[in-house]
Image (cartoon, rainbow, N blue to C red; front, side):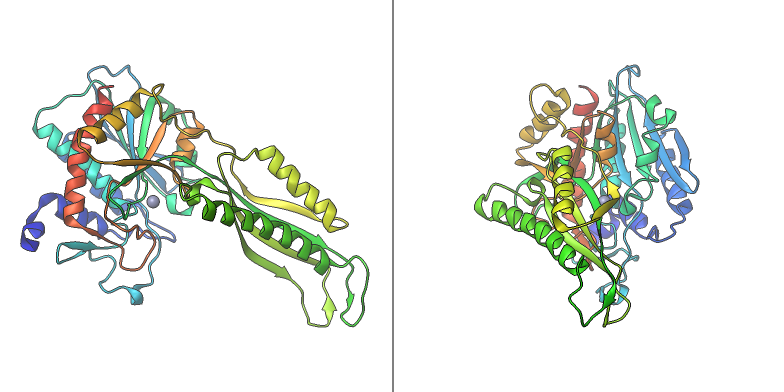
Length: 398
Ligand code: ZN
């Protein structure tokens, strides 16, 4: 069996892509581009490379439809992967070892395999001579793993993106440990906030007024109370997942120079992910209120403040959704619609009011994104190609 996978051209193709070290930081994407140009040549698709930000290339392959004026289908994947702690890996993370039918490598789940799924499904469809109504664009983007601002984030703002005339987009989701396939139609908004608590500096032996320790305690308490509320919501309703609630985490504490000196300023930073049900203005006003209550001159600044982005509709009003759901029903694959817990490039696409779904179509597969020994069963990967073989034509013929 294992020998069979060794010879499988789709598995080999995936393993070759995994061997390219497109790992943060300071990625040189040249090798990815060369590799992808080869893939496009095999498929007979024209290629364009855009650089909305220098050295951050976006490669677009195009399969022209029979009615090219119709809005197109976008199949997006990112080329970059997160760093590794090489010593903690059983097999070298960039050798794409195949051991007992399992492929080990950085990016095999997140998300190089998904990019290869699109390509392999299209190769099979092409060999069957299939043609599609709508144009299909495959985009391979940089820097998703560092927030995507210089990748998809900039690309969607360009004329070149507009010209793709995208009607619907597919991107990554998460593998699922259960028998359900997880599809993501929304993301929470990321807010990275630093709370600044100034106060009277002085000797550590006194009880001076205007104390920043007191202020920062008040602020931390407020955020931690909010965290408790979200934990409680999750515990009390088994239907909810982490993407359904606002998460709060204290990530940085700064201030002070010496143990007997009260500093001029203490700061505390939080990673907030606002649930899609949160009113952004109300939420910020609540924080403003806490600043006033905490004491004099407490303020805040944002390091990141994502806008509200509407979820993609998963009802009868969205023909692409019906096509998507119909494919999974036809294949008898159970689906669950969820809100993505982290951030993906889909948010930039949805911000342009383009419907976008995130799916990494592997079930019975524990998500191992960003983990040591990231792995995927070859059989699971091969099965997923057959899913896209159904899904792509259905979407492109909507
Ligand atoms: Zn990813």
